Image (cartoon, rainbow, N blue to C red):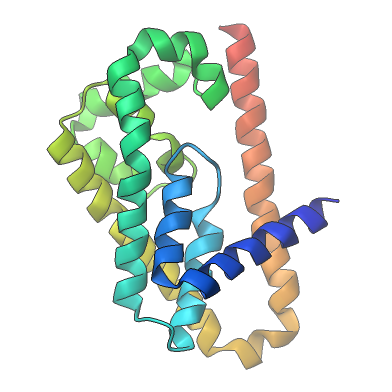
Length: 206
């Protein structure tokens, strides 16, 4: 069952990028940044593989990945900005965001200031959900979206490059490809389940 779902998601991601090209990368990365756990770890490496096929350059792939992150962050940021902490404390469970998450975000901003959003954009999992707390904390828009772009650009270059190296060694890795692909995405799935389970428990305890 899990294998079927994972394979279906991967094929959907591949189909979007193959059909829409760089714009498909932006679309998928925008979805990830809208608090939807669609892992960039599955999106950008395939974009890198498409680079080896001549579909676009590494710079185009990384740029559109970062643009997608910015676009996806806009609705999430403004939801937090206008609805505020009270709204999230009341309805945050529907976004899997607890008071504990807000407290962590407060500490990050207090310690690192606006740079915290730059750093978070290069961290797995947390990068997907950082825009909502940023809006709640009234982060300066020009800094937040600038740091979102550059943090996401670095992240995009890294994962696209991984995909390029895999694409360049397709024949060497061919006999391991399906196992490797499944294991990586399964790990992402398990981490996602752990994340959700932990947050559900926090929400029940709050």
